[in-house]
Image (cartoon, rainbow, N blue to C red; front, side, top):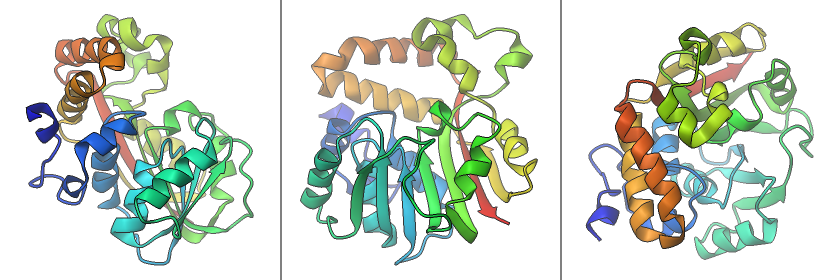
Amino acid sequence: MTVLNDLVRPDRYPRSSRYDPAWLLDLDMGPNPLWLLEDLAQNLDLRPGMRVLDLGSGKGATSVFLAREYGAEVVAADWWIAPEDAAAVFAEAGVGDQVRAVRAEAHALPFEEESFDAIVSVDAFEYFGTADGYLPYLARFLRPGGQLGMATPAMTREVRQLGEIPRHIKAVVGWEAIAWHTAEWWRFHWEITELVEVTSARLQPDAWQDWLLWAQAGAGHQPGSRSANEAVIDMLTADGGEFLSFALVTARKS
């Protein structure tokens, strides 16, 4: 129970701390999604009634948060989670009338152009958003002046600059770390298109420690994932914040 209580941090994440840590861990598909979203949202202007696409919404925690905390009308899009499973989470959380679950692949989104006020993606963009042509594709679905925000695993220095993936990271995630770019890499990658104005691109302070707390809690809460979480714990402990972080990037459509 002490480990679960470590996930309640009202001093740093007051909104997220109102959510049951066990509920969050039961929906786990990546580290501390509500902490990431709450931090990211500081650089967004989310208002009641906005139509928001939660891209790569997983089992639905971030969509619940967007609906409850900001009054958004949310479309929760994910490729791996069945819409009926996500819809059950939304109904149980009391936001079934605000959140619609759809199964969608990030490169074939079934939406009309300029149909969203904001697009948010938490711990998913690294899987589909690094290609040069992806932002121009995604921006089509934002209304003029619409906002884009994403949180993604990051490196403090580019793997290309280092010349290799550090061994303690490669041992756990392999080649995937080549998609964990710096915040400044993302700033350039988006701004060079001239389709958006980047409003913030930063590394989350002490992100590796947040990630470590989450992995420790997961190892205790979900016995079936203990070995995977312990590998992540070893990776983060070895890293100590030297290379691993999360990038939080926001932009507004030109």
